[in-house]
Image (cartoon, rainbow, N blue to C red; front, side, top):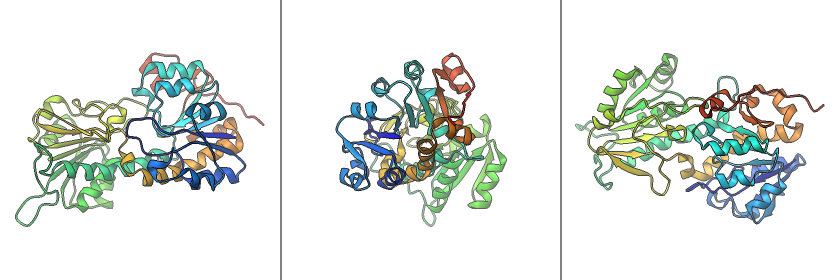
Length: 373
């Protein structure tokens, strides 16, 4: 199979879809890999490092899209990238279609593209590709939140996360106890913060207590407890994720108004619309804005801050699926792996994800695949 990896065009995106080790795996299995020149530079992978493992370096994104049967990338499709897609081409990426533009999905349907979303692929009870980035985002949420609590940031609270003898630590309130929330709770607790985690799922809260510490306060989430937690927080981390759906605003604007002056919100859910009503997407280069005297950090692609680590993590998680499709053909790969099939959003000109179809009021058809054998 011919596999194309374009340079990412999303603002501040520094990752590349595959590290050289992943390309090496594909080439040794007999597949051709085309990489746009300098696509890996911001992850500290040179064109030469890809040439050494057998990749073909090409000089325009258009050539990548024209030559490849499958496009492998990271950021959701832009309109110009959707325009470059060829008919019936496979696109494998974080797509977040439910919060994207309707004309993007319309282009995918018109061209009968097979759009497979990293964030929807399942393995047992887990989302293996999304999990690799969520582990990074959870740590960065604490790291970046701590940075913006410091006094060199205008209007910040000027406090140390771990406190000192006789001085209380920062209150870190985490909304959601999934992978992002769990990882953030572990990082904040290790820094000495007073950590409070809210979630509706008591099993997740028990895991926080047993696997990290029972010194972490766990609270059943509802509007009342969310309002109280928001008011108490020095750092509020939004770590809510609904599969293929826009995230609801669990933290209202009135709750934000009630927060401490200079408190920090890190809304990790922003790539799915955000769980805080006052959130809006920011960028790696311009990550914050102030509203109601509260610092908002809402970068959708936080793992780009650690692009090399993130590229390795993404490669480790995605390569088995890319290889499965390349080795066995798309139909056989989807038939043989129901978890992979759950990542398919568009197929043969129809939307195959019910939540996305409902969000845009377009026709939904269940995925029907036939073997190529």
